[in-house]
Length: 537
Picture 1 (cartoon, rainbow, N blue to C red):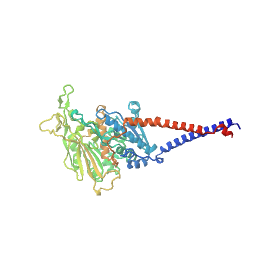
Picture 2: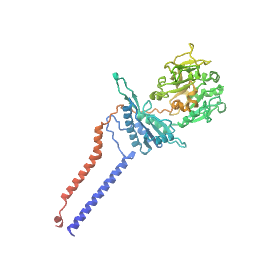
Picture 3: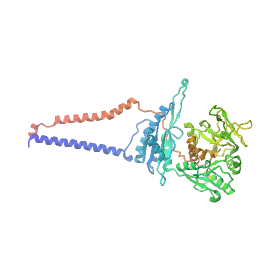
Picture 4: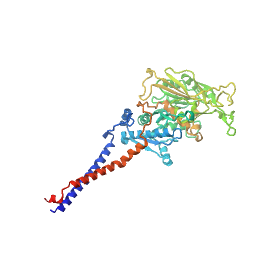
């Protein structure tokens, strides 16, 4: 056999081994990457000093036990000054956290970041989620068997239940202080949202009926009905029913919240006994008196509120309206009973906290003034929405209404919504595992807060819809108290130059270094290969 033929066979053999080795190496790389994508087939090591690149053990346990798929829709947009830089930092850190969650949960968690400039796609997704309006937020959702609308929970960017709490700083040039992050709570808030949409029970709201109340299942456009409220609650995962004590007897054992909204006649003795028994065993209740003083007295709802230590006045809270031409205060008509509560008129409470965080108003029409006359034993009653005190101020108009303040009418700030809670006694009976052991009640100075006249009027915006959801979620105790280790609020990230250097090394340095060593190996092999004469010998 000639030396040339041997050389060709040797080169072909070497070439085939090189190609085969390259293919094997590529296969190994693909296999390793595939295995790295399996949640149970990889080991991640967090080398940061604060552990910022790993999840809390509580989060790990929840993700490993997910009963089904969860979707996180990201609706992030830039914020205006002074929150522009803080918002960008919180958003970046939250996206990093979502990537950690996605890696840990694998295919069970899908994260979708939406481009808000694509309004058609965003609108379509919001319709699928049954969400009106849009803010800087995350939406956590999970499918519900037998339901068209998924269970979903909104996690705002800022606020008590949001991704972070912030200090707005001081814009005064003489004492300027930048906005800063006080606490980064995205992991806790996301975990609570995941628990709510995947493991939360579906609470039952029973609307009392047969006493002149507005119909919660009305479809004929009655402005005094509560049809829009019922729709909002059903979309939020509640089961809604009617309850008429005269025909149904006791309040159902599976009822979570009993809503008695603007009755016109008194409950019978048996019905009142059923309500008392419901509260005694830890039931939750929402009460709203009728605006008419005569119907307020006839309904007896003031007596029911009195058992909670809350007094309901006959008068209605009013505030002057501004003349659009002269901006002068205008009184003398029933429009003055349509009060606008600003965030400064609200207490820091789970129901009203989101309003304070984003600066939204609340419409409170024809509301009686409330007063906490007696605090519950082992509990708390607090006014969470109060009448406005901004000039020219509000007043309590007494019947017969003339809609004009006079010297005898009180101009002090009054409670319009009172939240009431009381720890359950050990004798109250068994409590569901995901409840806190306390009774809860919400007393509204006006059922108009939740009526279709407000909730369905596009001119008034969606402001009261959030109040309606927050109110019933708080009363029903749909709040998961998750213990997650606090995160360092400081956003310590690699500076821009260092990040660019790392990316350049990964994109260009490592491949070029591999090519260099491959070329060096080829040269060394050629120099060490046997010559033709040596081969013949």
